[in-house]
Length: 398
Image (spheres, rainbow, N blue to C red):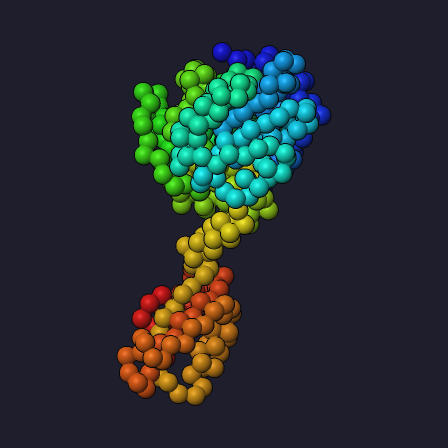
Protein backbone atom coordinates (compact mmCIF):
# COMPACT_ATOMS: atom_id res chain seq x y z
CA UNK A 1 0.00 0.00 0.00
CA UNK A 2 1.72 3.17 -1.16
CA UNK A 3 1.56 6.33 0.94
CA UNK A 4 2.50 10.00 0.91
CA UNK A 5 6.19 9.18 1.48
CA UNK A 6 6.28 7.14 -1.75
CA UNK A 7 4.68 9.97 -3.71
CA UNK A 8 7.10 12.53 -2.25
CA UNK A 9 10.04 10.27 -3.16
CA UNK A 10 8.70 10.00 -6.71
CA UNK A 11 8.34 13.78 -6.86
CA UNK A 12 12.01 14.23 -5.96
CA UNK A 13 13.06 11.50 -8.41
CA UNK A 14 11.30 12.99 -11.45
CA UNK A 15 11.92 16.66 -10.64
CA UNK A 16 13.16 18.41 -13.77
CA UNK A 17 12.12 15.50 -15.97
CA UNK A 18 8.41 16.36 -16.11
CA UNK A 19 6.71 19.74 -16.03
CA UNK A 20 5.26 21.07 -12.79
CA UNK A 21 2.00 22.08 -14.41
CA UNK A 22 -0.16 25.02 -13.27
CA UNK A 23 -3.10 24.68 -10.90
CA UNK A 24 -5.52 27.39 -11.95
CA UNK A 25 -8.97 28.48 -10.74
CA UNK A 26 -11.60 28.81 -13.46
CA UNK A 27 -14.28 31.41 -12.85
CA UNK A 28 -16.17 30.39 -16.00
CA UNK A 29 -16.34 26.73 -15.00
CA UNK A 30 -17.09 27.63 -11.39
CA UNK A 31 -20.13 29.61 -12.56
CA UNK A 32 -21.22 26.76 -14.82
CA UNK A 33 -20.93 24.11 -12.09
CA UNK A 34 -21.79 26.02 -8.91
CA UNK A 35 -18.59 25.01 -7.12
CA UNK A 36 -15.20 26.64 -6.60
CA UNK A 37 -13.28 24.75 -9.26
CA UNK A 38 -9.51 24.50 -9.66
CA UNK A 39 -7.97 22.81 -12.71
CA UNK A 40 -4.65 20.94 -12.71
CA UNK A 41 -3.44 21.36 -16.29
CA UNK A 42 -1.50 18.20 -17.07
CA UNK A 43 -2.60 18.48 -20.67
CA UNK A 44 0.41 20.83 -20.86
CA UNK A 45 2.96 18.06 -20.25
CA UNK A 46 5.49 17.35 -23.00
CA UNK A 47 3.51 14.29 -24.06
CA UNK A 48 0.16 15.98 -23.40
CA UNK A 49 -0.75 13.83 -20.40
CA UNK A 50 -0.03 13.04 -16.74
CA UNK A 51 1.06 9.54 -17.75
CA UNK A 52 4.69 10.47 -18.13
CA UNK A 53 4.89 11.04 -14.37
CA UNK A 54 4.50 7.33 -13.61
CA UNK A 55 6.65 6.30 -16.56
CA UNK A 56 9.47 8.62 -15.50
CA UNK A 57 9.43 7.29 -11.94
CA UNK A 58 9.34 3.63 -12.98
CA UNK A 59 12.16 3.95 -15.52
CA UNK A 60 14.32 5.92 -13.10
CA UNK A 61 14.17 2.95 -10.71
CA UNK A 62 15.40 0.36 -13.24
CA UNK A 63 18.80 -1.21 -12.69
CA UNK A 64 21.52 -1.00 -15.33
CA UNK A 65 20.91 -4.59 -16.38
CA UNK A 66 17.18 -3.93 -16.73
CA UNK A 67 17.83 -0.85 -18.84
CA UNK A 68 20.09 -2.88 -21.10
CA UNK A 69 17.30 -5.42 -21.74
CA UNK A 70 14.91 -2.71 -22.92
CA UNK A 71 11.31 -2.14 -21.89
CA UNK A 72 7.89 -2.95 -23.25
CA UNK A 73 4.45 -1.68 -22.34
CA UNK A 74 0.85 -1.70 -23.51
CA UNK A 75 -1.22 1.45 -23.75
CA UNK A 76 -4.06 3.18 -25.56
CA UNK A 77 -1.74 6.12 -26.05
CA UNK A 78 -0.74 8.37 -23.18
CA UNK A 79 1.24 5.88 -21.08
CA UNK A 80 2.83 4.80 -24.37
CA UNK A 81 4.07 8.31 -25.05
CA UNK A 82 5.32 8.69 -21.48
CA UNK A 83 7.34 5.47 -21.64
CA UNK A 84 8.61 6.28 -25.12
CA UNK A 85 9.78 9.75 -24.12
CA UNK A 86 11.52 8.80 -20.91
CA UNK A 87 13.05 5.67 -22.42
CA UNK A 88 14.47 7.92 -25.13
CA UNK A 89 15.85 10.36 -22.56
CA UNK A 90 17.55 7.49 -20.70
CA UNK A 91 18.78 5.67 -23.80
CA UNK A 92 16.54 2.63 -23.22
CA UNK A 93 15.13 0.66 -26.16
CA UNK A 94 11.32 0.63 -25.97
CA UNK A 95 8.52 -1.35 -27.60
CA UNK A 96 4.95 -0.09 -27.27
CA UNK A 97 1.95 -2.31 -27.98
CA UNK A 98 -1.22 -0.33 -28.71
CA UNK A 99 -4.77 -1.49 -29.50
CA UNK A 100 -5.76 -0.97 -33.11
CA UNK A 101 -8.46 1.57 -32.09
CA UNK A 102 -5.85 3.97 -30.67
CA UNK A 103 -6.26 7.46 -32.19
CA UNK A 104 -3.81 8.20 -34.97
CA UNK A 105 -2.45 11.25 -33.16
CA UNK A 106 -1.33 9.11 -30.21
CA UNK A 107 0.29 6.47 -32.45
CA UNK A 108 2.19 9.11 -34.40
CA UNK A 109 3.41 10.94 -31.31
CA UNK A 110 4.53 7.73 -29.64
CA UNK A 111 6.59 6.68 -32.66
CA UNK A 112 8.09 10.17 -32.84
CA UNK A 113 9.85 9.54 -29.50
CA UNK A 114 11.77 6.67 -31.09
CA UNK A 115 9.84 3.69 -29.76
CA UNK A 116 8.82 0.71 -31.89
CA UNK A 117 5.02 0.74 -32.04
CA UNK A 118 3.09 -2.50 -32.51
CA UNK A 119 -0.65 -2.20 -33.22
CA UNK A 120 -2.33 -5.38 -32.04
CA UNK A 121 -5.79 -6.34 -30.75
CA UNK A 122 -9.27 -4.87 -30.92
CA UNK A 123 -9.32 -4.26 -27.17
CA UNK A 124 -6.94 -3.30 -24.42
CA UNK A 125 -7.10 -6.88 -23.12
CA UNK A 126 -6.03 -8.34 -26.47
CA UNK A 127 -3.20 -5.83 -26.75
CA UNK A 128 -2.06 -6.75 -23.25
CA UNK A 129 -1.88 -10.46 -24.08
CA UNK A 130 0.27 -9.68 -27.10
CA UNK A 131 2.53 -7.36 -25.09
CA UNK A 132 3.20 -10.06 -22.49
CA UNK A 133 4.01 -12.57 -25.22
CA UNK A 134 6.49 -10.15 -26.80
CA UNK A 135 7.93 -9.34 -23.39
CA UNK A 136 8.70 -13.01 -22.77
CA UNK A 137 10.11 -13.68 -26.23
CA UNK A 138 12.37 -10.60 -26.23
CA UNK A 139 13.22 -10.75 -22.50
CA UNK A 140 12.24 -7.13 -21.90
CA UNK A 141 11.14 -5.40 -18.70
CA UNK A 142 7.38 -4.92 -18.62
CA UNK A 143 6.29 -1.42 -17.56
CA UNK A 144 2.70 -1.81 -16.44
CA UNK A 145 0.54 1.24 -17.21
CA UNK A 146 -1.11 1.28 -13.78
CA UNK A 147 -0.78 -1.86 -11.63
CA UNK A 148 2.67 -1.01 -10.29
CA UNK A 149 3.55 0.88 -7.08
CA UNK A 150 6.24 2.94 -8.82
CA UNK A 151 3.84 4.02 -11.56
CA UNK A 152 1.09 4.74 -9.02
CA UNK A 153 3.45 6.88 -6.92
CA UNK A 154 4.57 8.79 -10.00
CA UNK A 155 0.98 9.53 -11.02
CA UNK A 156 0.28 10.68 -7.48
CA UNK A 157 2.68 13.59 -7.95
CA UNK A 158 -0.07 15.34 -9.93
CA UNK A 159 -2.30 15.49 -6.86
CA UNK A 160 0.65 16.31 -4.61
CA UNK A 161 1.48 19.37 -6.73
CA UNK A 162 -2.16 20.42 -6.82
CA UNK A 163 -2.44 20.37 -3.04
CA UNK A 164 0.92 22.08 -2.56
CA UNK A 165 0.10 24.86 -5.04
CA UNK A 166 -3.63 25.42 -4.47
CA UNK A 167 -4.14 24.50 -0.81
CA UNK A 168 -6.95 22.52 0.76
CA UNK A 169 -9.96 21.15 -1.08
CA UNK A 170 -13.27 19.75 0.04
CA UNK A 171 -13.31 17.29 -2.85
CA UNK A 172 -10.97 15.85 -5.45
CA UNK A 173 -12.50 14.25 -8.54
CA UNK A 174 -10.16 11.85 -10.35
CA UNK A 175 -10.73 9.64 -13.40
CA UNK A 176 -10.37 5.88 -13.20
CA UNK A 177 -9.11 3.69 -16.01
CA UNK A 178 -6.59 1.24 -14.66
CA UNK A 179 -6.47 3.18 -11.40
CA UNK A 180 -2.91 4.49 -11.22
CA UNK A 181 -3.85 8.17 -11.04
CA UNK A 182 -6.55 7.84 -8.41
CA UNK A 183 -4.47 5.43 -6.31
CA UNK A 184 -1.43 7.68 -6.24
CA UNK A 185 -3.57 10.77 -5.79
CA UNK A 186 -5.62 9.30 -2.96
CA UNK A 187 -2.50 8.07 -1.18
CA UNK A 188 -1.13 11.61 -1.14
CA UNK A 189 -4.37 13.46 -0.46
CA UNK A 190 -5.66 11.56 2.57
CA UNK A 191 -2.44 12.24 4.47
CA UNK A 192 -2.12 15.87 3.39
CA UNK A 193 -5.81 16.74 3.84
CA UNK A 194 -7.50 14.47 6.38
CA UNK A 195 -11.24 14.27 5.76
CA UNK A 196 -11.02 15.18 2.08
CA UNK A 197 -13.63 13.54 -0.17
CA UNK A 198 -12.16 11.68 -3.11
CA UNK A 199 -14.51 10.83 -5.97
CA UNK A 200 -13.53 8.45 -8.75
CA UNK A 201 -15.08 8.65 -12.22
CA UNK A 202 -15.62 5.99 -14.87
CA UNK A 203 -17.43 6.09 -18.20
CA UNK A 204 -20.51 3.92 -18.67
CA UNK A 205 -18.96 1.32 -20.98
CA UNK A 206 -16.03 0.81 -18.61
CA UNK A 207 -17.71 1.09 -15.22
CA UNK A 208 -16.38 -1.94 -13.36
CA UNK A 209 -16.84 -0.11 -10.03
CA UNK A 210 -20.43 1.01 -10.66
CA UNK A 211 -21.61 -0.89 -7.58
CA UNK A 212 -18.88 0.53 -5.32
CA UNK A 213 -18.20 -0.29 -2.54
CA UNK A 214 -19.65 -3.64 -3.60
CA UNK A 215 -17.87 -6.16 -5.81
CA UNK A 216 -16.56 -5.34 -9.27
CA UNK A 217 -18.74 -6.01 -12.29
CA UNK A 218 -17.74 -6.77 -15.87
CA UNK A 219 -18.77 -3.76 -17.97
CA UNK A 220 -19.75 -4.13 -21.64
CA UNK A 221 -16.78 -2.27 -23.12
CA UNK A 222 -17.11 -0.86 -26.61
CA UNK A 223 -16.59 2.54 -28.20
CA UNK A 224 -15.96 5.59 -26.04
CA UNK A 225 -14.60 9.06 -26.63
CA UNK A 226 -12.64 8.56 -23.39
CA UNK A 227 -10.38 5.82 -24.73
CA UNK A 228 -7.73 6.76 -22.16
CA UNK A 229 -9.90 5.21 -19.42
CA UNK A 230 -11.20 2.34 -21.58
CA UNK A 231 -9.99 -0.36 -19.18
CA UNK A 232 -12.40 -3.15 -18.32
CA UNK A 233 -11.05 -3.75 -14.82
CA UNK A 234 -9.04 -1.59 -12.45
CA UNK A 235 -5.66 -2.98 -11.39
CA UNK A 236 -5.43 -5.10 -8.23
CA UNK A 237 -3.06 -2.77 -6.38
CA UNK A 238 -4.89 0.45 -7.28
CA UNK A 239 -8.15 -1.21 -6.22
CA UNK A 240 -6.77 -1.80 -2.73
CA UNK A 241 -6.04 1.92 -2.41
CA UNK A 242 -9.43 2.88 -3.85
CA UNK A 243 -11.30 0.67 -1.39
CA UNK A 244 -9.40 2.21 1.50
CA UNK A 245 -9.48 5.89 0.58
CA UNK A 246 -12.07 6.72 -2.12
CA UNK A 247 -15.45 8.02 -0.96
CA UNK A 248 -17.57 7.11 -3.96
CA UNK A 249 -17.52 6.30 -7.67
CA UNK A 250 -19.43 8.28 -10.29
CA UNK A 251 -20.32 6.98 -13.75
CA UNK A 252 -20.70 9.38 -16.66
CA UNK A 253 -22.28 9.10 -20.09
CA UNK A 254 -20.64 9.72 -23.45
CA UNK A 255 -22.73 12.84 -23.89
CA UNK A 256 -21.57 14.21 -20.53
CA UNK A 257 -17.94 13.73 -21.57
CA UNK A 258 -18.58 15.48 -24.90
CA UNK A 259 -20.24 18.38 -23.08
CA UNK A 260 -17.27 18.59 -20.71
CA UNK A 261 -14.80 18.73 -23.60
CA UNK A 262 -16.81 21.58 -25.12
CA UNK A 263 -17.09 23.49 -21.84
CA UNK A 264 -13.34 23.19 -21.26
CA UNK A 265 -12.65 24.53 -24.75
CA UNK A 266 -15.12 27.39 -24.55
CA UNK A 267 -15.03 28.22 -20.86
CA UNK A 268 -11.49 27.42 -19.76
CA UNK A 269 -9.79 27.69 -23.17
CA UNK A 270 -8.27 24.24 -22.65
CA UNK A 271 -8.10 21.38 -25.14
CA UNK A 272 -8.88 18.08 -23.43
CA UNK A 273 -9.22 14.54 -24.66
CA UNK A 274 -12.17 12.49 -23.42
CA UNK A 275 -10.36 10.89 -20.49
CA UNK A 276 -9.07 14.30 -19.46
CA UNK A 277 -12.60 15.66 -19.24
CA UNK A 278 -14.37 12.89 -17.29
CA UNK A 279 -13.83 14.58 -13.91
CA UNK A 280 -15.62 17.70 -15.14
CA UNK A 281 -18.29 15.47 -16.72
CA UNK A 282 -19.01 13.99 -13.28
CA UNK A 283 -19.58 17.46 -11.83
CA UNK A 284 -21.80 18.51 -14.73
CA UNK A 285 -23.82 15.31 -14.36
CA UNK A 286 -24.54 15.82 -10.65
CA UNK A 287 -23.89 19.49 -9.77
CA UNK A 288 -25.88 19.40 -6.53
CA UNK A 289 -23.31 17.07 -4.93
CA UNK A 290 -20.51 19.57 -5.53
CA UNK A 291 -22.32 22.89 -5.07
CA UNK A 292 -20.51 25.43 -2.85
CA UNK A 293 -17.56 23.09 -2.35
CA UNK A 294 -13.94 23.70 -3.30
CA UNK A 295 -13.19 21.05 -5.89
CA UNK A 296 -9.96 20.09 -7.65
CA UNK A 297 -9.89 18.20 -10.94
CA UNK A 298 -7.11 17.20 -13.33
CA UNK A 299 -7.28 18.02 -17.01
CA UNK A 300 -5.09 15.01 -17.32
CA UNK A 301 -4.72 14.69 -21.09
CA UNK A 302 -5.01 16.80 -24.21
CA UNK A 303 -4.27 14.23 -26.91
CA UNK A 304 -7.45 14.33 -28.96
CA UNK A 305 -7.65 13.94 -32.73
CA UNK A 306 -8.52 17.22 -34.43
CA UNK A 307 -11.41 15.57 -36.27
CA UNK A 308 -12.88 14.15 -33.06
CA UNK A 309 -12.51 17.50 -31.32
CA UNK A 310 -14.20 19.32 -34.21
CA UNK A 311 -17.07 16.81 -34.35
CA UNK A 312 -17.51 16.97 -30.56
CA UNK A 313 -17.76 20.76 -30.61
CA UNK A 314 -20.26 20.67 -33.48
CA UNK A 315 -22.39 18.01 -31.77
CA UNK A 316 -22.51 20.16 -28.64
CA UNK A 317 -23.50 23.19 -30.68
CA UNK A 318 -26.34 21.20 -32.22
CA UNK A 319 -27.56 19.99 -28.82
CA UNK A 320 -27.36 23.51 -27.40
CA UNK A 321 -29.43 24.88 -30.25
CA UNK A 322 -26.62 27.07 -31.51
CA UNK A 323 -26.54 25.16 -34.79
CA UNK A 324 -29.89 24.72 -36.50
CA UNK A 325 -30.80 22.57 -39.48
CA UNK A 326 -34.00 23.54 -41.29
CA UNK A 327 -35.67 21.69 -44.18
CA UNK A 328 -38.30 23.71 -46.02
CA UNK A 329 -40.64 23.31 -48.99
CA UNK A 330 -40.39 26.50 -51.00
CA UNK A 331 -41.90 27.75 -54.29
CA UNK A 332 -39.46 27.44 -57.18
CA UNK A 333 -39.36 31.05 -58.30
CA UNK A 334 -36.86 33.91 -58.38
CA UNK A 335 -36.26 35.83 -55.16
CA UNK A 336 -37.20 33.12 -52.68
CA UNK A 337 -33.64 32.34 -51.59
CA UNK A 338 -32.94 36.03 -51.17
CA UNK A 339 -36.06 36.43 -49.05
CA UNK A 340 -35.10 33.52 -46.79
CA UNK A 341 -31.58 34.90 -46.41
CA UNK A 342 -33.04 38.28 -45.45
CA UNK A 343 -35.32 36.77 -42.79
CA UNK A 344 -32.40 34.91 -41.24
CA UNK A 345 -29.97 37.83 -41.53
CA UNK A 346 -32.33 40.43 -40.09
CA UNK A 347 -32.71 38.29 -36.97
CA UNK A 348 -28.98 37.84 -36.49
CA UNK A 349 -28.62 34.30 -37.81
CA UNK A 350 -25.55 33.21 -39.73
CA UNK A 351 -26.06 30.87 -42.71
CA UNK A 352 -23.37 28.19 -42.81
CA UNK A 353 -24.58 25.86 -45.56
CA UNK A 354 -27.39 25.72 -48.13
CA UNK A 355 -28.60 22.73 -50.18
CA UNK A 356 -31.20 23.52 -52.86
CA UNK A 357 -32.88 20.39 -54.32
CA UNK A 358 -35.41 20.46 -57.19
CA UNK A 359 -35.44 16.96 -58.66
CA UNK A 360 -35.42 14.31 -55.94
CA UNK A 361 -37.31 15.60 -52.90
CA UNK A 362 -39.60 18.42 -53.96
CA UNK A 363 -43.33 17.66 -53.56
CA UNK A 364 -44.21 19.47 -56.83
CA UNK A 365 -42.50 20.35 -60.09
CA UNK A 366 -43.12 23.98 -59.16
CA UNK A 367 -41.52 23.58 -55.76
CA UNK A 368 -38.12 22.85 -54.33
CA UNK A 369 -36.67 21.56 -51.10
CA UNK A 370 -34.27 23.80 -49.26
CA UNK A 371 -31.97 22.64 -46.47
CA UNK A 372 -30.31 25.40 -44.47
CA UNK A 373 -27.69 25.03 -41.72
CA UNK A 374 -27.41 28.19 -39.67
CA UNK A 375 -25.76 29.44 -36.50
CA UNK A 376 -27.68 31.12 -33.68
CA UNK A 377 -26.74 32.57 -30.30
CA UNK A 378 -28.70 29.97 -28.32
CA UNK A 379 -31.77 27.73 -28.52
CA UNK A 380 -34.21 30.60 -27.98
CA UNK A 381 -32.62 32.62 -30.76
CA UNK A 382 -32.74 29.61 -33.07
CA UNK A 383 -36.46 29.15 -32.38
CA UNK A 384 -37.07 32.83 -33.07
CA UNK A 385 -35.52 32.45 -36.53
CA UNK A 386 -37.42 29.22 -37.24
CA UNK A 387 -40.71 30.81 -36.18
CA UNK A 388 -40.15 33.76 -38.54
CA UNK A 389 -39.53 31.37 -41.42
CA UNK A 390 -42.66 29.37 -40.59
CA UNK A 391 -44.77 32.48 -41.05
CA UNK A 392 -43.97 32.48 -44.79
CA UNK A 393 -42.77 28.98 -45.64
CA UNK A 394 -43.45 25.34 -44.83
CA UNK A 395 -40.74 24.18 -42.49
CA UNK A 396 -40.90 20.38 -42.42
CA UNK A 397 -37.99 19.66 -40.13
CA UNK A 398 -35.92 21.62 -37.62
